[in-house]
Length: 298
Length: 298
Image 1 (cartoon, one colour):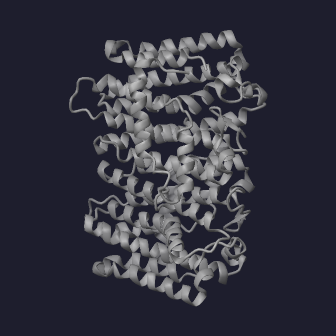
Image 2: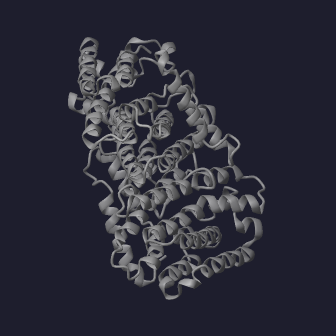
Image 3: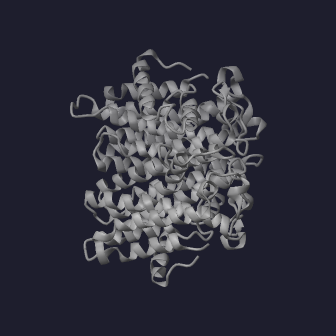
């Protein structure tokens, strides 16, 4: 998956910020910092930091007092959280995956103890990073609250992961599936754009509009992910394809079939994009990024 | 180990706050909330919340505008972090402990996947809690920065755990041992009193004085812990005694013998308490708590 070329500049800014925010590989004790860096720089697509930056851009555009690093660093903090969740998810006690983005998973490359602690460390570093983003204290606190809730157990990422595990090998209905997808995936994507909008200085009603956009685009993203797991090869995905079916995971394609899943992803994307209409040209980049994410092939 | 009776009131406040801050056992998905609650209410001594409250008390005393819940809730957030670290530390890939405070460890009571996710969830909930403590935004951000650094990899808790694992079955010198103890244990204890002082409205020079107190009392606490592991029975400790020696852990008794270890713990405690002299009667409770912690038997 390659971004349209006009996102390349943003990607470079994100990579540079991740490099700056992570302790160097020589920092004591080196093993944990090498492990954290291995996973963060394992070829992630930086979807969440990109969304954070582009959401910020809607509101900050043309405002010379705006500090663009706030959204970049908030986005990197979210990327640390996303990375920790993948590391822990890949562990033998959870998904037991050997491959992630075409490379050995962290516990395979290092060992299980290091993978557990590196995940813990990235989650912790995320909040240290957020406590220092260049905004006022009030915005920092709002961003921290938003992200911690989205990463937590009550309609958040960990809650979604637990529900996902519990739904394996069981018949699930559409309601449970919606809870899983919105918590496991959409919550952190929603938090990315909400955090970005706060960093960009959005007014409360704009933050709420961006929140609805994020919830729907995040949901669409997970439905597309499930579709790709069925339609694409392992080589294209960089991870084991067809794993959802093998694990009897609760997915849209399993519950409704592929054609309906495609339709539903499209409907969610349309719902999301409608929220951005009122921003006209100021939302062009966020709109194109969103379209790219739900129309992507592996 | 029982606290002097005049701490009972504080303990009740802490238990009530933990109860209030944790999602109920019925909240979806119930299994993760039951697991979090199992570990948080498994008989912890609440040392860190107590230290946070008593440090706050030095500065807040007699100030009617002061909100005592700030230090209580910050202390509970630190207790969540402490609890997560114990859950992950007990996992088979790390210390592989079956017993904690006389009860089955979380992965024994539930399963490994739940233990990993419950640890992640408690760490996340800690920062959500801190983002809501009843202080101004500026103090919240300072407390979050302090605690996230203390829990992290650079001279923080996770860094100390990694160094501790790497030091097993190897000859270590006093410098490495000091790094391990100050990072693994003292950092979070120091953050407890620093967070408390910030919640209590301490001036910068007072926060620094409390920081020195916390660093030394936290270090003393770990030396005493190592001594107890040698001197006390498993029944008294509520966990497997003599485990440090069996695992060839780096400890003060192993490096210097018991008499020198006792002496060193006393010296650290004296250094710590000296910092509180200037607060006279206002620090009586913190002083008594500190003395109790380093003079404790299991």
